[in-house]
Image 1 (cartoon, rainbow, N blue to C red):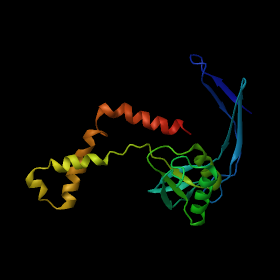
Image 2 (image 1 turned 180 degrees about the vertical axis):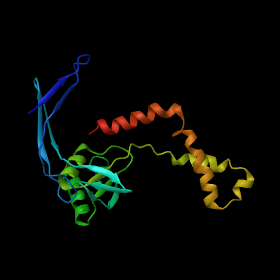
Image 3 (image 1 turned 90 degrees about the vertical axis):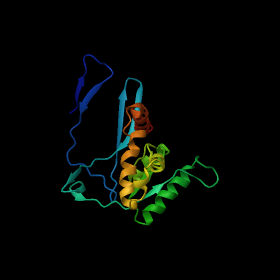
Image 4 (image 1 turned 45 degrees about the vertical axis):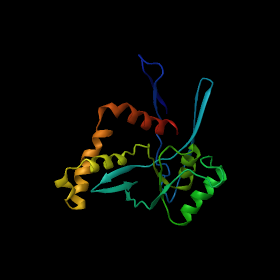
Length: 192
């Protein structure tokens, strides 16, 4: 049974529900996927989807009620001959190599990856932690150079707390950067 609900003010939004009883769940060890096809007028959207329940309980990340341990690596979108234009077969071979070495999680680096990476990761059973290129750690050097003489004599760990605590004011804690941060995050999600 499908329940569909039009939004009266905004006709571009539709809500519907499909009750699905006990689907096979997606995990990195058993990446069960289903084909979803949505047709609206003359538009067709096809997507593979998985079902899972994620929760944080007693400090543990649980998927489908079981603890998950991430064994991951950074992955830069790069090919030795083609640079950032990574051929599909190279990408797939890269992910299969990771799986053979018991890697179950990938952190993307600096920009959204090829959209095919996400589909392959779903199919092969790899967790993805995306990065929206919001790195701003370079500003700590400005604050380190500006330390008063008495603070320069402090032990490294104490200096680091002062420096990193102040460095966020340049970008992360600066309201003028909010639009740029949100734009990068939106691009990350919308590129999928």
